[in-house]
Length: 529
Image (cartoon, rainbow, N blue to C red; front, side, top):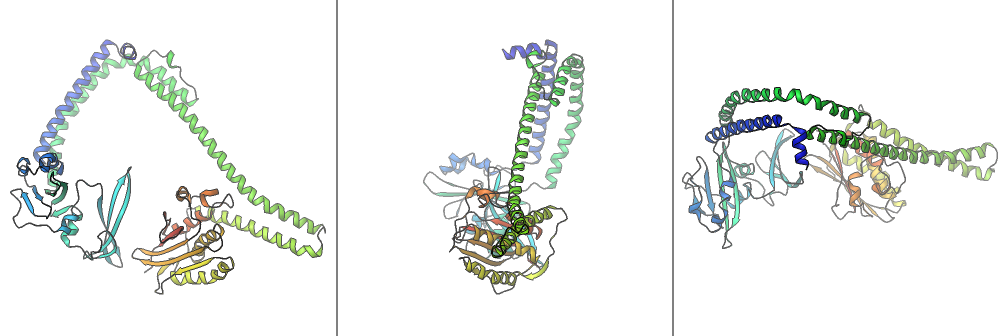
């Protein structure tokens, strides 16, 4: 029924005839150009891929190598190795002296493996290093599985990507990036034949350089001289034929568009125009509903923001009310001399709480300013941490907490703002003390890595649930999401994050924690040279 209505109301027999002619002409024109392009490019660039070989997987599993077109492709070298990496068969253009070690084969990119290798360069202390990572994509998100850092001579200075190897050969390094030789790439495909024996296909193919691409593009560009005028000629004829008739259908569509701005919904049953335009108005109606839903969501967020402000106001109002009441009682002489000191101490304690609360808001708002910078100076981060922990040790001991410290004697120089960085350590340790039972051991470690100083702060307490990990550094995160149980402003860890960012560093909540810890924060600060 809808199709009949569509034919009747959307296009008359004349419009439909010309539309079909236009469609057929355009499709034919593009098909012609496409086939010419394919033929031209195929003649210029005829480089096979591993899939051309794996299409014969059934024959390969039967070791029927005669049916495999290994000599079909020009400038492409193909080898098939047995389980001992001996050559079973090879294309005619493969050197008889060629061989591969087990380690070299392991470095060749695997056609059938989702994991991939990325190699990037970096410089430290006027020395050049290579960062080699093994990663994979899951749901369009890249996950790093392992890494290693190599110096300019391919010696492994850090990481476990290559196991116990101390260095890579130049050939192994080139294989990692898929390069066999200049202008040639390399890949492999591993499978098991019907007898359960391992087979490895190695393919060496020429890389498409600028000359290849320029030849292909030159041929393609010439075809545009045919495509463009023909396309516009057909388009002009079609446009002239339907332009007059289509105008009468535009007015209702325009009315529907204007109605969206007023929140009105167009009555589709009253519209007698083309089905395509009716569908557009349906979309506009849908857009109007989405805008209404978006407005409701904005109102919800405003209410949430108001709730947060209300909680904050309550946190300020409670101690201020106490201060007002106690101070008035003292001023009115309603407090005896014996209890006056007690009232004054309570006033002082509540004033300190208000001051701390307002300081947190002021500090966070100051860090939100675009011009905020840390006043850094070069210092030994190990000595700085030792001094802080020495001051903190007695306080932790009195509170019933143990402290496990692992700080090297060798200096590690970084540029830090002493006051701000002290705030970072203080916030993390205060949280560990506040939200863990007495007897909990707090862990503090400093290490030196190639890319900077690494500070690990954690504890062996109750830990942080997995669903709270992603929001721990967000501002105004309160309740269970930051272990505050509804107390505080939720700005402590947000301030920590801002301070570390100002130092051009990085802070992460490691999940799951390592080293047997329940909670683990890892801070990385660049070294100063």
